[in-house]
Image (tube, rainbow, N blue to C red):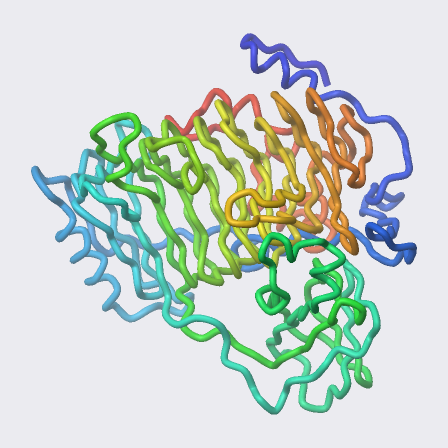
Length: 527
């Protein structure tokens, strides 16, 4: 497709839209229109039994489900001075209502205008939505006035970790569970039933640390017991079939793992923040005593943040943390961040430890460091789809300590990297495994893909000024088909209606970098 652009950055978008040439891909469209997958061997191994996992389970209710429109139960107008107490009181009043059959209590509608807010606002009950009348400057504007680092809007559940059934804990006996697998052989499946929620825990040993050469950076095997939430869909003998493919390898040589019957109690759900502009007051361009995060989801499931612009914050527009799963962030923007430009700052859209099945789509950042990023031991799958970053100061990608199952799908930005960060920070080491850059574009510096031993990272269909790394590459400087892996995998799994529920027509047809570049979070994104 030929495009005409009028800006300098748009000229490079044209370079990033070259037509693909035929080759032997790991994923390609078959005769029936669905993807066909070729298997591969991991770094340093010869057993070609792994396959690219299905990332389409990321997002609200597992992908393909339209975000709900929750009925308004409280309406507020802006008042002179501090509005925090009255907004929190409205949230608390709606929180006290009885939820309907869908788990919704109601929305608080903040009419257009400017609301000074002197500290955090908390949503602590299921089914509560905070909604404004637009993310533009003439919409609903919350001005964070507290002169200390804080998060402005916090959606938070209770507790941490999982409740385990001590009678349903078994060792994995298969010598090798590959990436993309949905079957797990265990010592004894008698304690499990179809429909059980389980945790597959990867339990690496010192051999894994030694082979990755991570001990020199302070890595200890016990710190890397990562838990993957799954559900049993079938049992045959001692083989469990799970609902979502594995995104990391479990092999006996490296300690394998265990399966637990487990539930995460206390998560908050069916909550959202919508159509609001967030702005932080600040004293100077490098001030750090002001609002830090716009919205934080903590121990949340099936929640959402949509059409929210955060301006002048020090860290993030949206940060998903605390074992949060199945959430969607869409059409959000982080612009003009205010802080020193150094470590621990300007992570525009962040996924924290233990978070999985989260989708960020149609998001924009300007002036960030790590704009679309994960922290340590993030289990995945997680997806950044059709996102745009400009005026970047560091790399997009997993940041440190073994995040797995990441898809960066049609992401445009500066440096885009998955690599061994070695002694960076406090010993970051290998930032990620099973990280896939699909039809992404780095407009400056480089796109880097390295693979750790026993794992694999991929660069497929990307464009960049420079390519670095010895990971898996396909079609450098040539886009591939399908345009979006996530959209195609969602189509294959749930059908056209599911795609139409969550992907606007323009986004279904082509990447939307040009539209995001023009939008900048300053109005309603038109697609």
